[in-house]
Length: 336
Image (cartoon, rainbow, N blue to C red; front, side, top):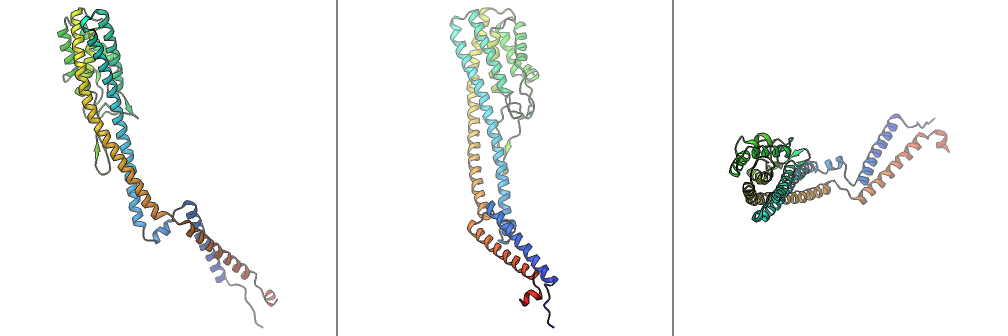
């Protein structure tokens, strides 16, 4: 009597293995269709894996450069804004000082001196501006305020006026205070570092330096001119009207020159800002083209993937049907 054996173990294992393979391929194809990108196996099979790796590394570099340029641009912009506030104060003070000099009296001098005091407060606040947690005028000491509170400076200037007998003495002492090495400005007011802050360096070594310390000659001269203006109206000491008028005149002239120097510095920083903007535009453009290059490797053709999914589904259905028939095969059913 002839017998018809049921599916053997080997056949069952082969069918299950085929099912698993088709399910895996179907899952990959479905993911590719939803994401629009090839799977790693497909990229590897195409021989483009090394090219893709190089592109990914390039994109990492470009992304890093974009962030570095953002920081460099942000710091440069804050330096510009700080210097702009100082420049505005110097210009306005000089105009007010020159306007009253021909007929200066104690009241008008005191009024302009109060403006000098306000301009000093604004200027020193501007010098303490920070980009995130980094003080942009403090040199390498980025975690510190660049200068002390304005009250510390006003107290020092008031002491100088109180101990002086004439305008010449006040001018000389204020000059020493601001401009001499180891003078009062360096010991009591400037709190930053004597070294410049590190530049912003791109991955290719290109560096952008926009730091201007609060102890630079330009900022010292600016603060000195306003301090002289404050000294002209200081209630300390016993300076007469002539001495105070001379202090105001010296302060107004110094403010004009200090402002010219500030404008020159701002021009240099403006050139750096422009270079940063150009570099940012180039880097972002290169990033877009690189992303497009990556997309050309990774992207899939939706119609091709959909066709592949349909074919895999048909194959899987065929395997399911065959497996079901084999599992249900018996002699009785065969004879029917």
